Image (tube, rainbow, N blue to C red; front, side, top):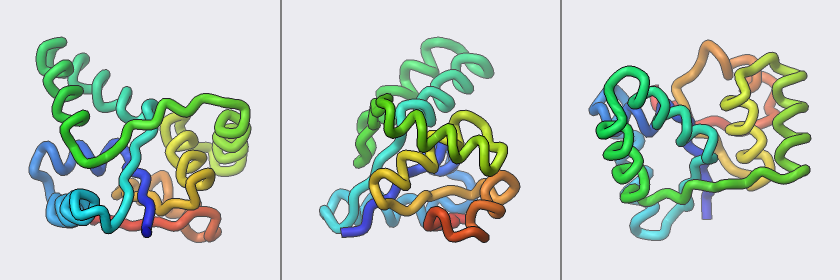
Length: 137
């Protein structure tokens, strides 16, 4: 069974109906049919929450959180030595944000594919073959 770790922008695009929504929706349908597993690291979920809190308000951020929890994905609250060191290596090697570092670390530890559209930050990583990517736009 294929395992995916979703980047912040994947869930945001889906919830906002942005281009690429069809790709994310297809993954959700597959996950509901137990044909794949979908995960999101808590730090990436945190990014979504704080963006809504900052740019909208607390009520909308809380509604967003409830919506995330209704999606066919599991939010992982992994924060142990293994993920911290793996994320540190990703940040040190590729000069990424903390959130992207944990996204990649979670994918590495799960032997999963990253679902993202963040070419600007992650094309360099993709070129190394360190992590597998599923680009939704």
